Image (tube, rainbow over all chains, first blue to last red; front, side):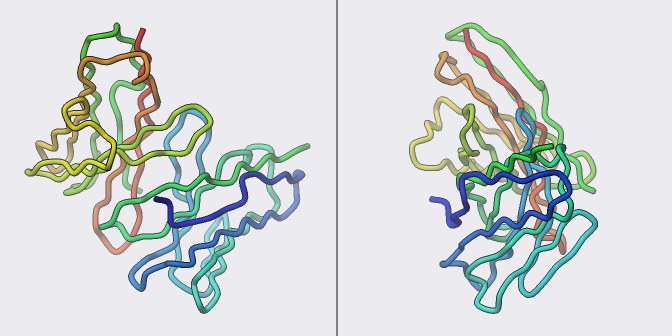
Length: 109
Length: 116
């Protein structure tokens, strides 16, 4: 049973910033929040991971409020190649990952 | 970064035959690997947890006698689909963790199985 809830789909245009929010009301103390990107017929690719506050890497930022019941993946200036499904997962590497429906991001020219 | 490979990348087999899919962690040791199945336009569904040196743990509804999992070493897990049927046609993906400081699971590229 997936422990996260995300919008099914989102549309954006090239160059825009995209924010995808994920709800995880029952997140456990030991859980981290991890986001993956998946293109058709490929395995998921790690984007970013965080525990609290804000994390930034070369491709995205992750915002986590103090209660940790939600998180927001921010993709700056998306391009057509960012069209993919984005999954939010909670857990640690000792636990199983149950994938939710993910968010299908469609970037338009 | 850590790399997980799968072999084959795609396979076509006839109904009633068995197919083995390999999952390897190339540059790290993985005591635990996970197997997922993904049907078209659907999310990944966890099938089982593969533990090195012990029996796999299957998710509810997954037939353990049909999907045989062997984790013979710290870098190799195999999934064998026995007596395959067309409804077993799917995209099979494995993942592994090195249990290091990063709470990250590394996913393989997937194996497309088509049963005719």
